[in-house]
Image (tube, rainbow, N blue to C red):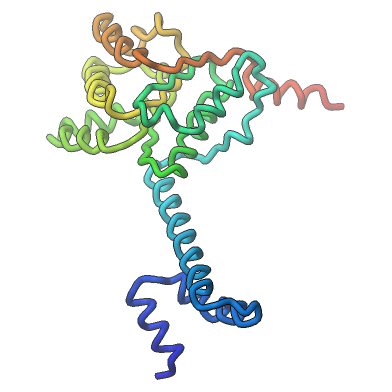
Length: 250
């Protein structure tokens, strides 16, 4: 077996795939540039570390189960002049996650609440945080199923290991009493332990339409709004704006 073949066998055994892919090319570059051995190894190691970090980010994004990926750079802040762009970008740094603070996006449908929630959560994945995205209705269904299968405790324990949970579209579908109680239990478990992003089309005064019970709703709001960043989006639906632009075309 040649030296190169033997080297590749050892590199694969050490699980250094980027070394395998690049050592020959980097060796040629090092020879042309008259680099010493430590600099050659440093270049290979830096490439390996960068590749592993990219793979970790991809795994975190996949584990988050985003329905679609959205970026802060693609959000049209000019359509919502009342929204503080600087504040949103500052939240993108993720300090609220370390402080386990909730973010609540309020506003009518079509203003970009889900876009902002997804983009912030995507940034969190890139920063090394464990993230999970649910729609409110989807989470309630999973909680009720877990309860029926006597594994709700395991599901809640797994959620507490997350750094950030996104709860999207709260307010579109009212919950059964059992569903409302399950979601209250979930949010209570995460309170001051895991950061939470909530998007909702309802004012807080109208949350009883979803949860039914006034006391349960009040208790949930007490937990969610404590130390929360509350951002209200006001403007025209982007779908309405697009339709109006199409209609204005000759």
